Figure (cartoon, helix red, strand yellow):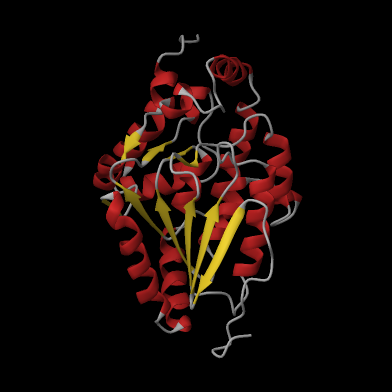
Length: 287
């Protein structure tokens, strides 16, 4: 235990590299080859959130990715059942969803800041939306909710958060078009707090984290809890979105469209993943 009552992070993770600097923890996702959200990432995230729930945990957490091209491109669509089973360990079988796991992230007694380089789509975007703040590199950050283009609405908080942040019209645009949003447009719409040049991103986020980390813990927790009470979706809303996603992602239309995307190179490091919004728009329409 440190001199201010703070403990260091005790666990080691397969897909998350952590570094503690005073009151600020850096957590870097590293799940090659593509940083997909699969069972290993979810298992590690469940364990990390348990550690961060302790009253002596660091005051601020910065999340980023070791992959400059992909923060989280989306879930591993070949392992939906496996990562869902891992997510259930955060709250029990009744809450077996990424949405409820990400809600736990939003309610941590720590301030969470996402530092975005590369692509964050689907549940990757929803992870960022569950964080308290998001800052993006102007040259390379991409955000998207591609689920409708595949055949299901977002199921891990995207609808709830985007409607609150963007407003109805822009949330409908983001969700229904399944388009890729660059950092400038995401900033203008409110998807991220700020978009800055890549060369300035690290310094900006480090400065914000250090400033917040120097403030009294009780005040940080109280202020965050009050804002959460106004802005977070209820558990019932999160569970309803998750149930609909789980139903439709296994449906015939989603299965057909996913199969076509896999033929084009989905979940490999190629053109389909780099420009998924374009690939979705070019899929043949279904009745």
